[in-house]
Structure formats: C-alpha cells, structure tokens
Length: 487
Image (tube, rainbow, N blue to C red; front, side):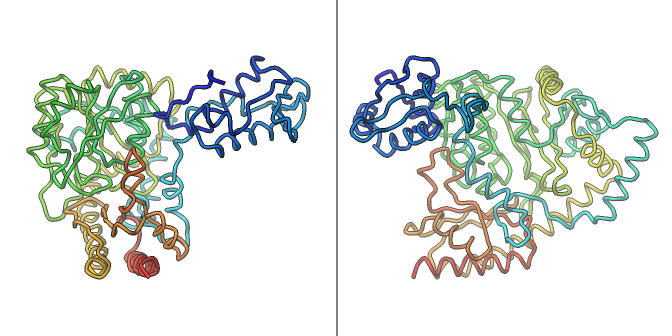
C-alpha cells in the first residue's frame, strides 16, 4: 500500500485522504473484486498513522459496500460482486462525484457565526452591525422610493462593476478619507470575503505565498488556502504587524501579496500605527509586492482621530483597498467595494460577469439612497456613540474579572472587538461549552490562527450586535462559567 500518499500540510483530514485514495483505486479497478486489504494495524504502521484512523477508513468503505470483513480473513474488496454503490443498486454514488478539496475548511467559526441570530441566544460571536440605528419605517420608505423609481425605468439590474452612481458617491466618500479615485477604480461586491476571493483567484497561482498577521479572521486565511495560496504568518503587537524582519521574510518566502487589516482589526481590535503602515508601504515599493488592505473599521474610532489608511499614503497604485459597510449599515444589507488600479478593476469586473449573473441590486440602491441624502454620514456618528457605549459596558464587566480570575485584555480605541486572554489553565473551548449551556456564545481564539495549536486560551468578544441588556446578561454568564471551571 506504498502507493497511498499522505500530505500533512493539507487541510484535508488524513483519514479522508486515505479513504479517497483507496476508494479511487477500487473504482479504477487497481483493487479488483476479492482484493485483500492489509489489516488495520499493518496499514496504520505503513502509513505512520494511528490504528483508529484506518478503522474509520475501513468502516466508511464497508458502509458503502465497497469492502467487507470476515473474522480471521480481514477485509476484501466487494465492489464488483455486490454492485452496491449507493443505498440502492441504481443510485448515483454522490460521494464519488463530490470534490473533496473543501473538506476540512468548514469550522466552528461558521457554526458560531450562524448562531449569532438565534432568538434565545446571547451572541458575542458575530461581527454584525447594531440592529436599531436605521428605523424599520425609514428603511421601508427608502425601499418604496427606490422601487417606484426603478419601475419607471423598468429594470432591477446594475452593471457588473456596480451601479455607476453608487461608485461616484463612493469616490466622494473616499475623498474625505484622503483617497483619490475615479469610478473606474471602483468595483462593487457583496462583502469583503467575496472581494478577497475574486482578487486571489485573479492573481494567485498555486503555491504563491501571502503574508498576513499571525492572528487573522478565519475567512481570510481559509480564502487564501482555498485559492491554493500559502499563508505566511508574521507576529504583531498593539501597533500592528511587526516589520523589523519583514525584509528577511520577503526575501526568503517570495510572497505574492501582503495582506493587512489596518484599522481596529479582527480579532484584536488594534490599529496599525502610521509608522508601521509606512514601513509596509516602503517594502511594497522596494520589492514591488502589492498590498491588499482591509479597512472596514476605520470609521469606528472613539478615543483617537480617524486612522489614515495605507491607501491614502500610497503614492502609486500598489495598494488594493477593500472597504465594507457591514458594520455601519442595516444588518444583512451587503455592500463592499475594492479600489485599485483600473486594469485590476477591469479584470475583476470581467470575472464578476462570468461568475455572478446578477449583482445585489436592492442593497446597492439602498446604500446609494443613504449616501445621496447624507444620512449615512450622519449615522456614522450614531454608530460611534452606540458602539462606544457598548464597549465601555463590556469593559466594565471585564474589569471585574481581571483581578479576580487573572484574565488580561486591552481596551480598544475603536472597532467592535475585544481580544481577551484567559489564565493558561483554562481552555477557551471548555469555557465556550460552559457558556453555551447557559445561553451565550463567543469566538474561541484558536479560530483566528491558521495553526489551530495556538490561541487556546484566548477569546474574541463582539459588542456591536448584542443589546446593552444582552451584554449585561452575557457577561454575567461568562463570569459564572469562569467560576465553574476554576472551582
């Protein structure tokens, strides 16, 4: 069985790799009917895996009728003899048709995020906008106006690049942030994850490296890995990505991009200092490496002034800039955009035309309405006040746990996230199990490391979405769960 190859750098679980290869050999006939497979112990030794891994593989194959076992005789292939491919003889065998490279990428992150909207659950897990900044009757009135105007035009579509008028409004908004751009430099997407996926699929080749912060949203490093890229982690501190040895890392790893979440980032809530931003930009110029900058949190500043982006400091066109309205617009209304060199935007628009039949017209029109009438800019102030109040409430509750339980955290000066370090003897998974029993959920820290062996005693708390009452109750649950584990 030396023909079975295991790649432990892959995200696909080892048992799935073994199972897929044996199944493929059975289908191709290289393991014919009656072929005797090695014992569980022998194959485990040959492949250098635990015996339970092979037990699981054989159980899967047996349940599908591809092999059978007999006492004292071991496992034999029975595929041709039984013809049992699915539940019935003539069923399509879907497992054989489904691609497996996505296995292992779904994670607790997705499950916890999706639970953010359960009615009876207090969720500190999702990074979602506050629910009541935009009144329901105001939104209904805006939609009524949009629909009436569009009915007169008799269409509900936007161009693949995004609505032209919205792109003009975006360039005006960006001018207030020190970024000069034309509508031709703007590509509209539904969210930054979608934008990043398109950017990487446009320019990343299998094996290309992407430099990122060692702590990063799971959506980022999974998108890089799914595009065939290599994640290159760089440590960070309260000022952002540490740049002292970045030139050595660049020379050794030859990355295709540097990815930066530059303003009140996810998950730490820190923002990159201007000095660090300039250093990264200098490296980009020196090595001709493009920077992908995510700047979603830049309008949510509390104690500091608005944080300038790397894009606003870029003398050329080295920065691909991503911005999302997800934290400052109606929850569920997805609009984000990319600003880049017009040649990049042109190619992104071509990809959108091939992969997206119809862009989200309603979301774009609502965003345009709020930008045109000035209400979006006005509401930014309301968001800042609301989020600051919620942050202070959550921090007050955390302060009570600092001396009593030995937790550590740094109060963020903006954004919507708190990054909390637990005592080393407490695992965030165990704490999550305790809080979920009591009706509260959060994101355990290991989800923000591409290496899941790190971050076991960290957690991320979001305060933008829950109500103040929810924060009060949720933090009391956190305290109770900590007491239970420590006792």
